[in-house]
Amino acid sequence: MKVKIQKNHLSLVITLFCLYLAVRYWPTVAKLISSVTSAAMPLLIGGVIAYIVNLLLNQYEHLYSRIFKTKWAQKYRRLFGIVLSYLTIILILVIVSSLVIPELISCIKLLVANHGQVVNRFVKVIEHNKDLNTLWNSFDLEKIKWNQVGKYLTAGFGGTFKAIISTASSVFSTVATAVVALFFSIYLLIYKETLSRQIKRLINAYLPQLGKHIFYVTKVFNDSYSSYIVGQCKDAAILGIFCFIGMSVLRMPYASMIGVVTAIGALIPIIGAILGAGVGVIIIFAVSPIQAGMFLIFIIILQQLDNRITYPLVVGKSIGLPSVWVFAAVIIGGGIYGILGMMFTVPLFAAIYKIIKTDTHKRLANE
Image (cartoon, rainbow, N blue to C red; front, side):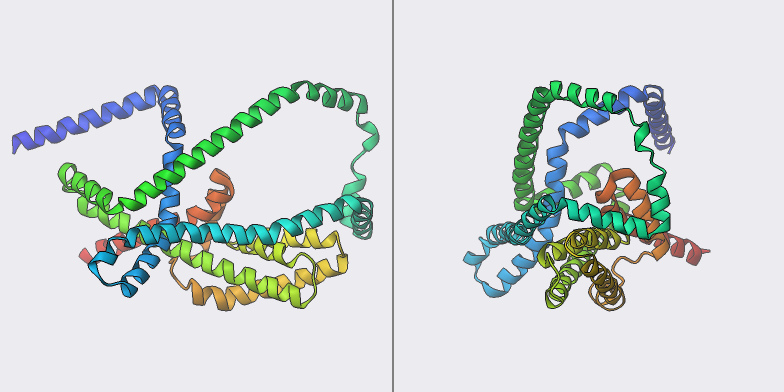
């Protein structure tokens, strides 16, 4: 008993000493963490890719097992699932690109050819709106020192060559990271059961008392993220398709591109709908202000129908997070990691909320 107490005291002293060193030499520790994170970034990205692809892989493997039931065929189940999962993602990207790129080029050509008319339309809108007109008149263009602006722009051309080299290096680094991440994700998917068994053995060997809690927390986080990703993707696809169909029926321009933008925006909780609608209004405004107004009314009605009918049916209560905490997650995640933070902090908050809620019920029941 005394030996056990001494071991606990020793581990506590070592932990406190390590925390003291981390706080005392925090700049060095932070730099070390940053270096390790940067070096491991391809592996982290590969892990994220593997997690998302695994959602498709599980569905394809289940389908394969129902169709091919012989032992010989089961040997190729994983290969079939991985190939089909990545091909599905590539096919989606190709379809989206084929829908967006032609209309994007057409939109850019229109803006370049009719930039004067577009500017005049914006000016007319400003002139007819008192608040915008007051704001525009508050800018005194005569006070701008145009000579200094010209010198600044001229000096900027001197670093053009360095910028080209830096851009080329950045592109090469990005491509290399993407390739490593892709191969690592495939490796994780091939050996996911083996890796899972190894991790469980390590936890049971070195953290036997905490093993049960670790497995429970991991399951809650996995359920939260998987249900959130699948639900959001389904809802976004449905919203984008209905947006495309509605715009096509109403004869609005750039239906394919705006439908894709709306679907992508739907992946971001709360703010995504506003961003998608705003981008669509700006694009259509360059063609026709009247159609831009019609689109705004149409997208508001469509989003209301989605919030009240489609989203509850498709996603339901899979998130399990009150709306106030969803809003908090979006704000905090956006402030830390931008748009990606908005998307991935909601299931994080949902998992934490569920763990705390379950633990609270247990504590109150034991009293």
